[in-house]
Length: 113
Picture: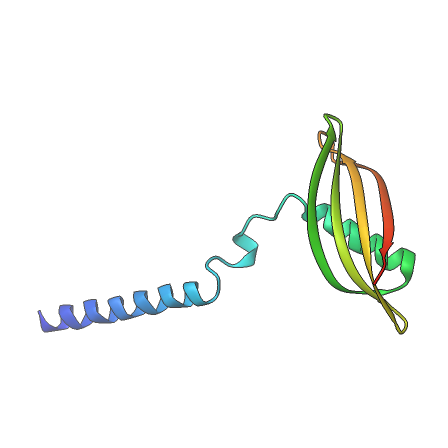
């Protein structure tokens, strides 16, 4: 009986430790968490910014989605980029068909500092 109680105590300690680790490290691993709807368009915004401006993206923020019609939506992102010694903000708008996920256009607007 003493061995069973020691075994139960060890299992309880291990379970508590595992639960604490999950809480400390944000729950489920990233590979098991759902990707947000805008993630695909955010990757495109970053890739196209790097290609167009030959710059490093320092920061990225999702502004939001606007449903323009049943066949057109727009995701907006604010990026902070560094081009040589120059750093500036950039508003990137990606328009797409939400039914087919086909990209329709991408627009860039430099933000004044």
